[in-house]
Amino acid sequence: MHIFWFRRDLRLDDNTALHHALLKHNNVQPIFIFDKNIVEELDEDDARINFIYENLSKINSSLNKHQSSLKVYFGNPVEIFREICHKVKIESVYTNHDYEPYAIARDINLKEVLRDFGIPFISFKDQVIFEKNEVVKNDGTPYTVFTPYKNKWLFHFKDLDQKPFKKSNFSNLAHSKYLFPKLNDLGFSKSSITVPNFDLNKVIDYDKTRNIPSLDSTSKIGPHLRFGTVSIREIVNKVKSVNETYLSELIWREFFMQILWHFPHVVNQNFRSKYNGIQWRNNEDEFKKWCKGETGYPFVDAGMRELNRTGFMHNRVRMITASFLCKHLLIDWRWGEAYFAKKLLDYELASNNGNWQWSAGTGCDAAPYFRVFNPSEQIKKFDKAHIYIQRWISDLNELTYPQPIVDHAFARNRAIETYKYGLKNSLLEEV
Image 1 (cartoon, helix red, strand yellow):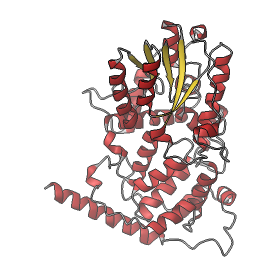
Image 2 (cartoon, one colour):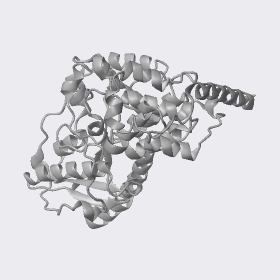
Image 3 (spheres, helix red, strand yellow):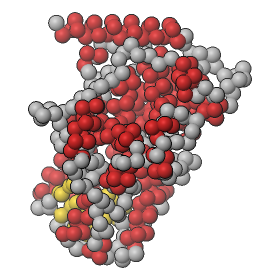
């Protein structure tokens, strides 16, 4: 038997590793593992687990039409594979690459276990167009500034013939009738939040509408790319000639992925160490108010309330809320990054981390530390009629709505002085 391991690629069509496994072998058994090292940290009714489960159910139904089925496990993947190998003769394991530090370490451990059984671990690029060292500077070093990375990405892309795979040979699937588990069998329950379908029709005017949060103008493709319910090759081929600005957003995703792969320390450290001297205030009461959307700044509060209710937040508002936490409140970007990681349906470590460090000024190609968004001015530019704000803040004109948690001018000056002092201290430590 040959195993195909679903991970961040929850689809049967245009799935690189699955395609190659079925092309080369028969008796291919698909499996999925709810990795307890990841999912045990999540809430019981986490909407992303629901989304994964729903798509696994669809995959299983499709496999049933080919006299096959999906075997679902819960536990430590390395231990699960060790147990499988003791019970069944496995000839190979196929899967697609994952670029996050935990997944890389897990796969290294798994390779060693499989090697002891004489089983090859075969993985493929699938969730990006270009990975790892495929887009680097002429001297072989990684890009840390987006625009030159994007230009090189586009240069390579024009010569790339990377079209979606044709239909795979599903007749080579293993004939199996595994019982598909119920959601509560896995320790989870139904979520009140659902992941919306994506809509590529929104791409057409994306460059004109992308900064207006009151409009339903974003494609909502984030969770689908995160969990691989759609192929990045298919999406890029559909949008590349439709909207250059939208394509740039997809390239940003790959930029941050290669940053994470080259510089894994960014998971919990500043990309730019010169900002290590910043003295964050980390006021827990203020952080709680930010989380709840009770800062007294309507644009910030609307964004946080939208996030808490739906698992989504418009990208413009993400920048405003992140900047506010780091600059106005001087709360460590890692606190905000962790909260977004818990709430966002489209949470992806590389992009979430990269964007938070961009907002804090500590990351690669980041906003300068003295750039402090004025939330009130942002309203004038992007929600002048308060359509978005009133959608999420029902008590805006009530006495119950809080007063501003901090004065903008005071907070701006405090942030700039704190960053200056932190930079000075970091320089002194290096001398």
